[in-house]
Length: 506
Ligand code: HEM
Image 1 (cartoon, helix red, strand yellow):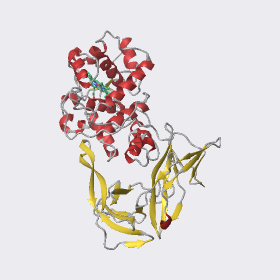
Image 2 (cartoon, rainbow, N blue to C red):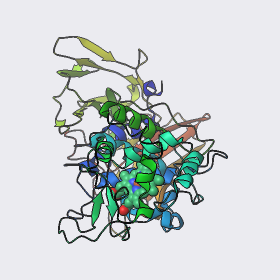
Image 3 (tube, rainbow, N blue to C red):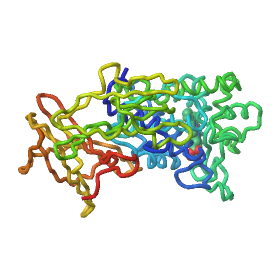
Image 4 (cartoon, helix red, strand yellow):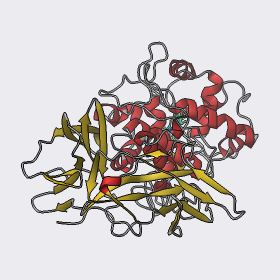
């Protein structure tokens, strides 16, 4: 349903973060699993991998959930130093995860959605099942009550703890096995459980849960069942902390099955429930699926001289039509293929110059495949809507002197009487890795005295200290809002994506 509404910046952003995993315009998450799943934030030779940290982070953020009153859950509260310093959150895996994902967050992409999506992308890219992802988690503004299970606790405590989180005993057994197919116990974090290591390729002393600790598979179960497991929470020298042993055997191994397909589908649905366990009152979106032909940053741009250009790209999901046609003009060969994996491709619009006085209000494009079947992409007949009330201008530029200063230039339709013109920008509250989360601020823009009117548009020149990325200019008129967004990567110059992008220096 939501996928046919355009533009829908939040959906577009989440879809891109979820599915643009590598190459040009990739989001931040896929890069954590490339070139392989052994990749680790803190450098090689630690014996660790991002995938372990990311999946554990999602679980620990969620595990504070209290199903009786709907408090806690996956809400990004694990970013607070007070939560991080609890013994139930021992180790630096959470800070590693937060430091990796936070720079990719913004007004549409909360810490909580970032943590949930990081787990989904990591699990999928490391051989696991697809996990339906819904967006819309809202970041908590204070720490949650403690409640993450710890290895020295009794099986009774674990059963009641998981019940509080909303999981039965059987689901607890499965979820622990699904999580512990990745990663292991680090000596640095749990010196009493994992022995020290002299291995130069395992400086953290990682004792893996199974023999394939960066791969999703059911070896966590089969090695446990056939007695070959080295899982430090099953065969650890200190029986008090052998929590996986107590959990896995708590129903006489009835749940610890060896069928890989059942393991896969069970984990998919339990991981989905894990990330969808959010505080009461938060309503998540529908499952986000890839948009096959997705307009990206399509907008009308003021280029001066009374002219307007239609700029933008179409992202083609994971395949390549032989030709993409836009408003009947033949276009472009795709020039930036995504790398193997998910073969997303971006196709730049050709240069389309319009006189500002004969503006357009919709666009559409055609996709032709080898069999000469032509498919029109026009939002089911209505066309993709464009607004021409406020347009960014190619006259915008940056200076780096004394911090960043942006010289904004934008055009507002002269027949509009704006009741308010203002800017919206993103920034981080707190330090990255130490409680930071993205927030949005605004500032009003007064009509400059030197406004010039050309071809039915007023040209506004405004200086701002905000080198903000993105920076949105919003015009309120007749009870409606019209907006245009400047990003560092805005296609200020048509042409090859990845080069000549972004506002030029002044
Ligand atoms: C009673 C329940 C659980 C206990 C006592 C427990 C305990 C532990 C311990 C002690 C570690 C070592 C952490 C480190 O050294 O950094 C660990 C790692 C991990 N846990 Fe659990 N865990 C439990 C449940 C879960 C669940 C339900 C999941 C996910 C669904 C999960 C996912 C992970 C992952 C992925 C790692 C690897 C972290 C890494 O390698 O960086 N755990 N767990």
